[in-house]
Image (cartoon, rainbow, N blue to C red; front, side, top):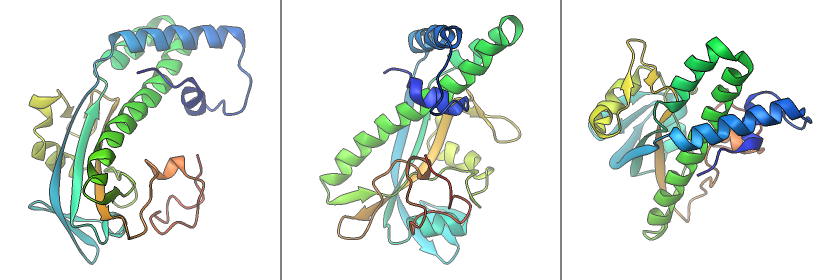
Length: 221
């Protein structure tokens, strides 16, 4: 798996811009180090899913979120996913924050791009298996997005035993460690029902999609 240079530049705010040779060199150095030292791991599990107004029942856990309920409406099951690329990015940021701030900033961006690429690969495997059952995937939806409260991460991580299975833990403020990690719910919908095939809303330019939250309308890739 390779660091997506284009996405890294987007995270750096350099979309569509030419970069100088020094930035390109630093980007290549960071990407090579990150690819060498990262240890991507993931865990996911399918749970029964039910929406009731602005609440969602996943397994035995009830989540109050109108945005999530809209995303999962009509889904009888949802996949709970957690993934991380490990602590390499965090160590690199700490190191380069002392020695090279430009490289530290590039590492933050490259790490964000790298975990997204990895989650996309994991989701592709989930989608392949779902297709065999005549199902397709809704866009993945993560705690902290819209009105899906960040503190829900604690229960979701416990449901997957993230700390023991992939080394993913939470701070007191419910932030993930390692930082380049993702938790998400992915609804499974019957193929005959309209269903989004994009990984996340940020990848899509369709601003009037029924699966978008009000917060994400107007956001494009």
